[in-house]
Image 1 (cartoon, rainbow, N blue to C red):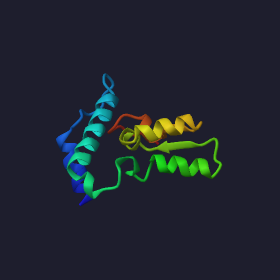
Image 2 (image 1 turned 90 degrees about the vertical axis):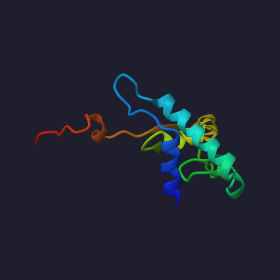
Image 3 (image 1 turned 120 degrees about the vertical axis):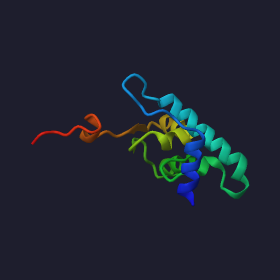
Amino acid sequence: MVSEINRSLKQKYPTQTPSLADNTIKAQYDSAQKQKQWLETHAGKYLRPSNQWGQAISTQMIHTLQQAGLKKLWLGFDNWMPAFYQPEAVDMAKNAGYLVATYDSYNTAIERGKTIPG
């Protein structure tokens, strides 16, 4: 059910495929905020407060890390979408001295559909 809700919201608030000319980061962020707002408006009474949504990052997670005495951390994501849904948590993490970023790999350094010989 959750994946169907996610699919429907992405369809309702689509973004273009990233290209070299436009990485669509702002459009992805705006889409994430619209999806979140729609869900808060239409299903919010059945859900926890939106600042607690998500397993990847939330303000509560940042509080927990701080309470554990962790002062320097890298909070890495495989893509920016979790951060786009929780910008307040990202700001809180940065203010706590944490580095928040996506991780990259060799696999994402080559163009889609191309292969490396050897």
